[in-house]
Amino acid sequence: MADALAPYDFDLPDALIAQRPAEQRDGSRMLVLHRTSGEIEDRHVTDLPEYLASGDALVFNDTRVMAARLLGHRPTGGKAELFLIERREDGLWRALAKPGRKLREGAEVWLGGESGDAGSGARGLRAEVVGVEDDGKRLVRFTRGGGPLAEAEEREALDEIGQLPLPPYIARPTDRADRERYQTIFARESGAVAAPTAGLHFTDTLLGRLEAGGVGRVHVTLHVGYGTFEPVKAEDLADHRVAAERIAVTPEASGALNRVRAAGGRIVAVGTTSTRTLETSADASGTFYPASGATDLTVTPGYTFTGVDALLTNFHLPKSSLLVLTSTFGGRENVMRAYRHAVAERYRFYSYGDCMLIL
Image (tube, rainbow, N blue to C red; front, side, top):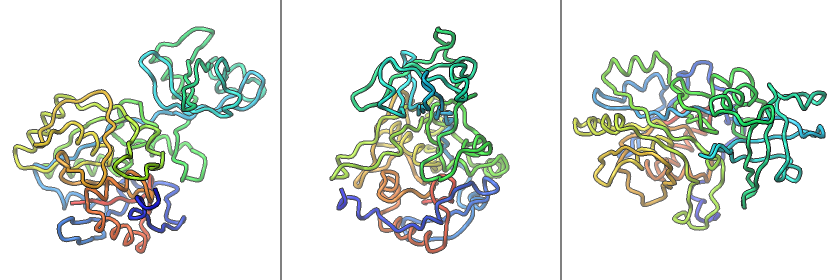
């Protein structure tokens, strides 16, 4: 593994890991990398309209981050935590659980109460562990008053008591401001456990400027899964697979993308999640089709991009699958040189950090 990922390693001082977002969403810096020439420019997100032309289209992931971290108590009063991963079609949730040795099949977690009234929960919400998967993840059912909840009622209750799951490299508790700033302004359908962070930089003002310049806007959906935090374990990158995540590309979206291509415009993916969704829905000729279900598309060296012409993305962790994807798109030597430049110029890294535009 070390040999396979060594070309994607770099030194990053802890001080450059952004712990909070920029004061303004579009106030972040933007490193511009030109793939053909290798030229690097230091700009700002507000300069983005200068690099796009009338007829281009930005593609945004409109997923919404779930309040997936649930704190509660066992009936005995001991603390318990659930981290929701996804809701299955049968109404059960896949989840991580702490303490795992206590939360076995048949265990209950009373949610939202303090230690003195653990049984009350938030409006009586309880989570029952109904199964344990081979990889240790729990299957959980939510109930109130001994009965099941409708999906809409369930999501409302979870949003009320849950916390947004900030990434582990943000070394502070979630606060009230994160409820707004760790969602894009166009977040729609709840289902992600992490934000599509390149989209966090956009404001209504910036979108208005882009629209005035003739730049189109297309929405697709990829519900970011827990696999986004998992390290690459394969010794050969070609053997690595990203865990499947749910996607949706509507007929309206695929039609709009095909019209952009037919007119000679560029498809500009906002984030690696939009990139993977676009590449899943495009064929070898670059024609887009509606898509739904799941994608486990994993981009490694040698992959040929047919759905994406340019990429706006945040800076990623060393040796991560997202850095491998970005490097495959922009050229590994180009991208790693850009990362070294970003460190030297003290760009802010990761979810709440700055971004780079690869043209």
